[in-house]
Length: 478
Image (cartoon, rainbow, N blue to C red; front, top):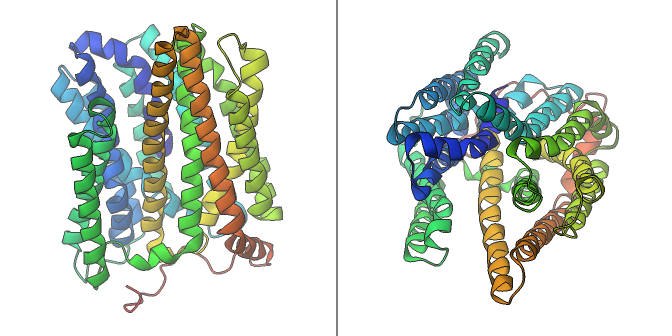
């Protein structure tokens, strides 16, 4: 349910932006900070929050994040002016980062049995993928029927229920402790690097990718990141033990999921624009148009995919899933300004839904398969950071390329509609290319780890030793 709040919030605000702009007198440039404040905060604190879960206890960190997100949502709803809303959105992003950073780790440690874990992972994927579509629908309904304030107030009952269930259901985990101290320098460096880098990304559309502003902040982020790795290599108690980057299944799966999520972002971003700008759909009708995608993902994730994963292992499930996602994006790349929804858009949306469901669950299981329980929170944060960064950077680059294509065609005398659609088509092709890269990584880098996971799932123990107990500390490995 915590992930549902985060997933809803990722899209529900976009539909209400015109109403927010009108009520609080935002300029067009300042309005972007309603979205950017959340994105910057959320992406910057994922890694640090995940590691804090390992150190002080994941339940404590999770509940703190849910509480902060819920309170910040109420502050967003009652904001009387621009500054209050932007500050509350930053706090909301921080709460979302803190709560979501440890969710995967909680799943891994709470469900040591492979069958139960696969079902839990499926539910997580369902909420992550389906929440974006539901956010578009809920945003349209609430904004048109009541007011934009309710897109934030909807989080209050969900947050209270999530907090109560978390207190009752999640087992206490004291973590590794802070006996050896806290890596303050490393924490500040990695958080500052992400903060500066994400700021450069989300403001690049305004200043330009080659501008002094973007290059300067981007360069500063790289320098801070290099300093972080240098510091971590010399620490006896690093905030991020560099050994975790040697886990091939974790790193490879995170990259593949990043490639897939670029394709998904392209789908929802260009799909929503196409339906509203070219086909003339209202925000509510646009949300309804994506509803079949959510239904298919739900139907597959909550039973079929987890059973296939347990029976055949990751590889025979994730490869067809990526192929289906690739096919769906290529089909969408053929849509023009006259393509009907039923004949030309719904079939690829359904194929993409099948691909997303079949690929994401095995990839998530594969990512966490070889991670020691003591590092599960950090690995969970890494998985989320990789997805967020790849999606943000990927969509920013793809949309920029698509806009350049559209601008060039308009200058050459093409109609505005055909030029815009041509830009969307190029965006879908780039998204398909990213998915193809992910497929190549699966068939090369992840081939061995996937087979090992399949063997472990087929064993009578169903995956070996329980993951719920922290692994013994290894000072040499730190």
